[in-house]
Length: 374
Image 1 (cartoon, one colour):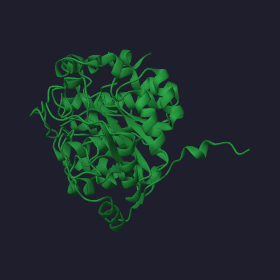
Image 2: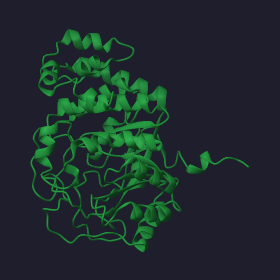
Image 3: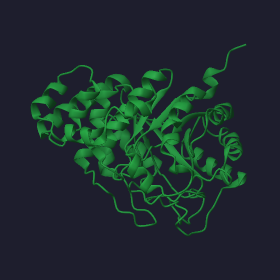
Image 4: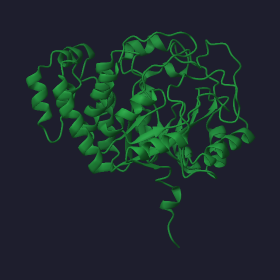
């Protein structure tokens, strides 16, 4: 069964009614389960959860995370290569509808950015572009990865969806991870938010993580952009999707992100608001659903909130982020994809982690680990 077929088993209206009508007794029953079913998960993201039930869930999430991951946080840096984009996404700063000076980094600029991030300590880098394959396509990415691999052990991509052969080319170039948000799992709303451009194809994007798994990528990261649609169903579908990928591609690590919609050029207003309590609830519920998943929290969130969420399931964090191409080496921050909230330097984030009894891990993977000894 494809994930699209699995998704069709949970119609949004029925699902939302089920989640919002969950009783405290049903939540208590779900909290008593050693291993959550997908129905248990739907109960734990209900807005009807009490403070004491949320506290119980947070304690369990902390215990599971400590058992599976210890007290370590992997730090990574986003590296924006291009803000060229052919899509008309209504919520994104890179939208083709927004008029600003577009930029795609040259090889020399890519190397400059990579050197800066290396000096800051980063060994995990996430490469990002808009969706303009004719400008920053697979050939361009292969060249970028070749340069960046000299300075870090792990390279992931957050770019346009590819076919399986495209992802295999990325693996061969040295990429080991993919991040690809579905944005919203509401197909009708998705088409409204993406009026034109290659990203308009809901099914092609939905199947992309599976194509990446077939190509052999070691990490597969997904998530929805909280605020675009109905957050309760989008979080449920994200968990369902992650569970599907974890079972099908058991050799790969599945990761989940929790981005909340941030201000960006274009002035798009969220369709729903996810407050801090709800975000905490979602993170804890997903940790109980998939104990071995990596859970990421970016600099979209405030420093205070990121600090407070550390014990509840988070395993990876970005630090010192810039969302404009060339932003690490240039003072001009025009044309950012979105605004960040946590502006601490990587060194300050590392010091904070140490003060709370955590170890900041800059490198936990290298492609050389797979090289056979002759």
